[in-house]
Length: 165
Image 1 (cartoon, helix red, strand yellow):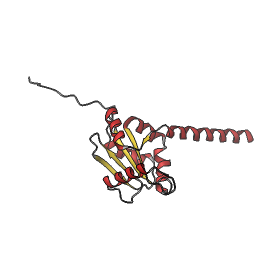
Image 2 (cartoon, one colour):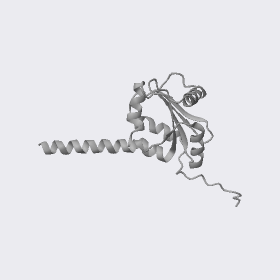
Image 3 (cartoon, helix red, strand yellow):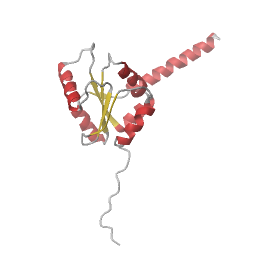
Image 4 (spheres, one colour):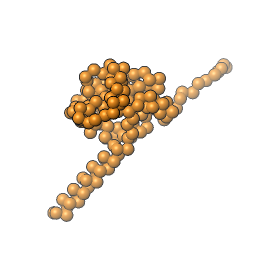
């Protein structure tokens, strides 16, 4: 019996470690202009996450349920360049980053609604914006992103020239 419990515990620990490793592979930038340049080069959309990492319970829950999920990680790697716009209360940030984050908050009219996600197209226009998180994980968020994000794997439509019969 002790052997079975040990094996189950080991599997649970390995599973958690693999899950955390998967989430850790995402790169979150903090500079929107660099993110937009990268997105343009890779033909991806930009996703900004406005949140309070050390004080906002729904932000922490969204991070755990959505952004750390294997489904989101796989989707983001293929389709998104991620921007972390954090407003922590206890964690120290460089003044330059604080100012940049505040400017983004004003630019996208975020107010006090955290978490908020903003999806930008290749022109930098907002194509989707949503505030708050009420659980549900990837099935609640991914369909909205998929509907609006540019998929770099989709082929450009064929353009026909001068097709006269």
